[in-house]
Image 1 (cartoon, rainbow, N blue to C red):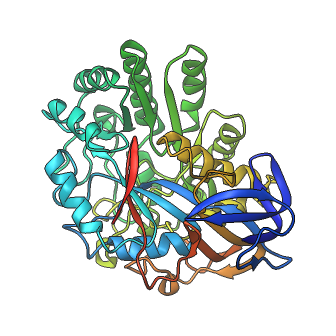
Image 2: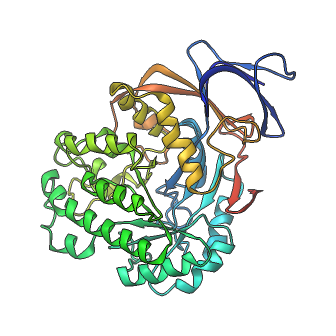
Length: 437
C-alpha cells in the first residue's frame, strides 16, 4: 500500500491510500487495507508514472549514443515508467517486422521501465505497414524531409496519402515529422556558430506548410495522424480548425519549446540545436496557450541524444537533438508553476494524454485496475542540472547549470521500486498484453 497526503487522481488532488496487488492498483481510498505500507512525506505528491511516447533509444547500431539500459534508467529517474521508442537512429531502422524483432531482442533484459515501439514509414514500404501493426507497433513514423540518417529516408505527400489510406483500413496511426522539404531547401543555409542563421534555415513557414499538408491528407483518407514536436505557434489555428471539422489529428510539443527561447541561445551552443528549432519567447507563450486550450494534446521529450563530439560549434554540421528524458517533468513543472499552472495539468499532458494517444489506457492514471506505475515527487524541492549526474549515456545537456523545481524521489513500476539494478521492464505490444522482456 502507498499512503499519500497528496495524490493526483483523475478527479483531482486528495489524500488517499493506494492498494497494489500483482502490479495493479486494486483500491484507492482511505483506511487500513493491509500489507506493507510506503508512506509519503509531507512535501511529497504521488503521481502516476509518466508515459513518454517520443524517445530515440538508438540501440542497436548507435548504442554509443544511448541504449536501453541507460535510457530506461534515466526515464525512471525522471518519473517516466513507459517509453515508446522511435524507429530511426538505430540500425536497422524499424521499417519491417524483422527489424522490429531485432529491436525487441536488443531491449530484452536491459529495460528498467516498460518499452513499446513505433514502426517506420519510408519510400516503398507501404506493404510493411499492416504487418508491423499486427506485430504490435503503436503506429508508424515518417519524415517529410531528410531525417538526418541515410537509412531512414523521407516520403513525399503523395506517398503519405497512400500510407494514410493503408493505415485507415485497420485504424493505424501515422506520426509525422512535419517540415516541408522544398521550403527548407530554399531557406538560407545555416552558417557556423550563428543561432540566428540556424533559426532562419528552418523557418516557421516550412513547418506550417507541412502541417497543412498532413491535415489535408488525414481529411481525405479519414486516417489518424499525429504531428510530432510542434514548434511553430502559427500552426495552432490550422490544427484547431481541422479538429472542429472532424479531422482525426492530434499534436504534441516538447520541453525545449516550452522552456527555452531563441533569444537566450548563445552562438555556438549546439546543445540547443533541434529540428524544428527552438523559437522566440512570444512563440513559446502561444505554445503554452495551445496546451491550455487543448489544441496541443501532449508533452513528450523527443529525447534525441548523441556523443559530445557530434555537437560541434557549427550549427550547419552539429547533430540536431536535445537530450532531456530524465529532466522532462521538472523542466515542464518549473515553467508551469512560474505561469501559475497546476501540477495536475502537467501530469495530464505527460501521463494520461500520452498513454491515451497510444492506447495504453491502463497507464498514466491512479485508479483501480490501472498499472501500479507510480512516482513520488517533491514539487517544491530544487536541484541544479549537472549533466554528469544524469543517467543519459553522454553528459550533453542544453540545461546544464539550470535550477529546476521538482525532484523525483521514487519511481515504482508495477508496484516495485526501480533501483536501476534489476531490469524489470516489459516489452509492450499494441492491442495485446505486455510481454516480459
